Length: 388
Ligand SMILES: C[S@@+](CC[C@H](N)C(=O)[O-])C[C@H]1O[C@@H](n2cnc3c(N)ncnc32)[C@H](O)[C@@H]1O
Figure 1: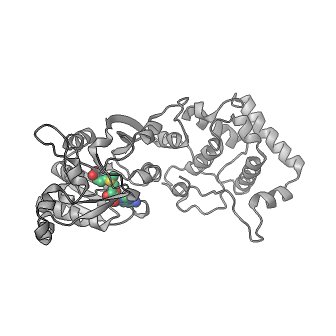
Figure 2: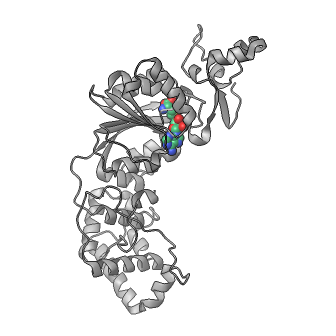
Figure 3: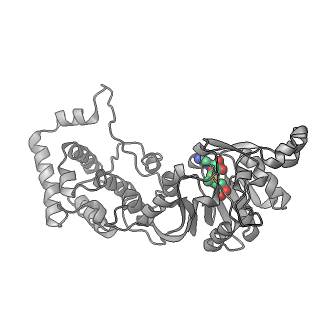
């Protein structure tokens, strides 16, 4: 039985899948630095340490679960359909189990890893195989790094950054063929969900607008060291070659409004006083600017609207807005939105049951009626990422 602990001491050179003669897993040997073999060598601990290389703790907080089953690693690489000339982006290479397989079949790997101890081990293992000229390591937080150009992504990513990372990839400026990602199973199910499924949410809606997602395979938690609490799945995300003609900033803000409470009907959502105030403000600003351009080249820098912004007097936007908008005007605005919802048959619909084509149609008719969602007065920096 494995001991439960927040982090484990592990010898990176041993983080490989091994079975004994009877087919039993020898993971315990890898999970704890002190093994029976090591105990025998206790008299010359220093020598033993040198022989087995550096040891370090694997931190669950950094999602450090090393994929150790070579059959699974091979399957992931096979499903990614790499070409010999490809530059592969790998997020979170860890000790390099997947990196080495990727280097065998591609031109170059760009590996983004936050943990310097992992980077040292990775570099050493890659150099031992003579691949060092084809590896570029970026030792940074993948969410705060501008990726260099790449053809394809293959990665066992840290699960805690799944949402922002997937959005960063599919709404980013770099064009790529596909991203083969090992994800927490529940997260993968959400990406794969369709309208009407219980897992269908705003993330799936936003990803599906710009990419197709395919299920590749499930991976057991026993294929990792240390063994995580959750199972995993591999999905392949392929950016669409033709994007719908919609302002991404506007779309992003619109889906945030619709999916604020995904099981509410759209009629109920759009009648909330607070929401109406926000939309009144963004529509008024858009009306003044009259320049909501249809533009899909914005990458991810399209939106930044957060709740609870405070003005210089310390009042919330809602308070200052509500005191400045006559009630009659607000009621007319509400009637306009409800009129559009009713005329188009959306009033009693729930957003989680609508296809992206239906949502795009609703956004188009609302925009046509002068109802806008993106707050054009706000900073446009890193807007999409700030919101996931
Ligand atoms: C699930 S492990 C995968 C290790 C390796 N790819 C494998 O399959 O065995 C995730 C790796 O991502 C790294 N990591 C965690 N947060 C990160 C971040 N924000 N940016 C880059 N790497 C990160 C961890 O240090 C860890 O090495």
